[in-house]
Length: 357
Length: 260
Image (tube, rainbow over all chains, first blue to last red; front, side, top):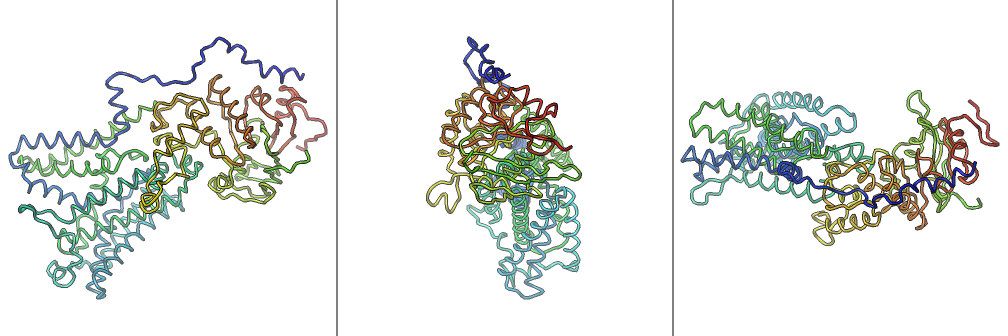
């Protein structure tokens, strides 16, 4: 029976004369396939194209559109959504979702304000405490998702309500007036300052948003941590086996998202002047940031997309709102078109994914 | 067998609820050998491999590496000890590039301030290394080392996973069904690679269903049955059909009794 073992080395004799080529690539040369491949590698291209097209259309329709004041107003209006979008982007890249972003932002802004005005803590320290507490709120989300293994949707649906309610209870529904803040704690309104080159007002908040997007784009693309965020969102089991500490990454992502939300809370004080627990961001921040993320081409299934895409997504929403107002249509058309865009963006995402099939 | 085993396990037990995947299992890997692990489906091969590579933690029993007891809480710890594993699922992130995947969890950073302060990845170095390792494997003609793994064929993916393990394994390389998704010619390359790795003095654990492959490359064959080691045979002493008979329980090897 030992002849079997010897036969093992000869069973591939039939290979002789067969082609020596091993697995090779054959590029599909059709234009559509190439576009698909290109989009696969450059996920922020779709929102960029939509943005450029929207800019051209509104530029043609309205003579006022390409004025510096209009453009700076658009940037100003998306500053908060853009920063919340940074938070939402990293969470969505891990195949999660964070419904509590707006609540963390509002609660953090209230905490900063009340630390200063109720407890008399110096404003810079109050801001640091607010940022730390926002990070802690994100950490709780991350801990529940990573360690208790609850679905992110459920966790953040819960913390959204909990934090928003805590926000109303803690603040006793009190608004801190803008004039008081300006007089006693101007640091809280820091991001509301503006540079005015040639009379065009550009808020510091706009620069902050752009800086955060740039930093996160770098971190996600060029650091090991960023690659691990993608790996966790792509296939958590594979990432774990390949040596990624998936739980730690998840907790860090949610905590960092909490920090970004707290920064957005600080920016809100500068943007609105006052500290208000009833700011609409608490209810709408999550939907607005998810909209920016989805239109920006980040896949809700995780692991795909770029934060620059989210920035374009936020810009598209801002451009639509402003452009349609200037053109003089019913404002409901904005939401109508954004709805169409969301569905379009996800359809494109699905199509791009087929590149692997 | 006067040598001490490089990797040794004694009395491993792993239970999943009511299922006992590993039932007092022993294991020995000698330095510089290719040890094949075969067994029927559900025999607990994968659980054994996962315990050895840190992917699961055994409930009982001990593992020694180089004579020292070790306990791996994660694959990362096993890797730090020089044990590399190619899992059946390959453990690749489809949307990330070949180079990213090869260096997952052990990325290279740029020298100087860019690396230490800004933690920037040294992509050129990683790409060069990845390309060199894939060429060494000769398994495929990769055009672009930055293409996402999901754009590769099943065989190419497996090639990348094998190259990753072979490149980084310094003590033990574990291959779980490395030729399962490969064509005949690609399989041959992997078998050559396995011999290359052994030639470098690194022992290999090969899990495979492909009896001709097992009998061709293995120095010894560990036959796994019902969650434990049934016997270890030399491929020259028995035939493939004997081995299949042992692992399915149709026949018992000499001097082994099975208590059911």
